[in-house]
Length: 180
Image (cartoon, rainbow, N blue to C red; front, side):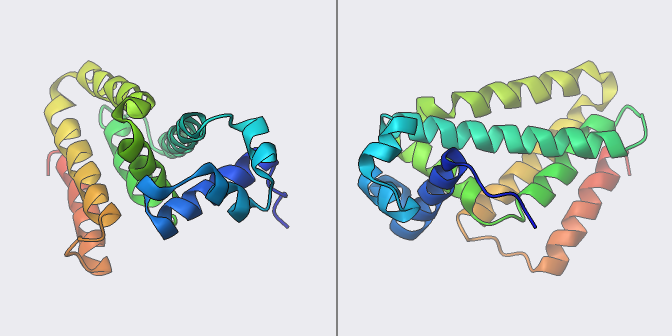
């Protein structure tokens, strides 16, 4: 039995659902409160503004992805390509989840691009780590950009790939990182 979500997670899940159902630009505190089964005041206790709610959606997304990336990294053998492989594997696995991540990005971007600052900072940190690996930077950067591009296509629901082709691309990216 999975643990019962706390009010904050319940609200963030409801916000993502509203963004998915109604469109990110039309996500309102009233709609999120209704979806979460709370009064607007109850919602505003946790998130006093729409911007605060969007910031929390993005922060949770970054936190979950970074947790996934770290967990994947811990399972991989130590090597110069470990960080890049962990990024690609975590990105592909993390993005298999429901559209909650997409909803967070779209809602934040539709409201204010500055709300994506935590994502920018995390990406900057990852690419700095890739640069610190020396010669593997170019391959790591290309693989990370490719997997992020795939995510954008999937987020927009315009990816031309079948599940089998997606798996082939994933395997190809991991081989590419190793120089193959």
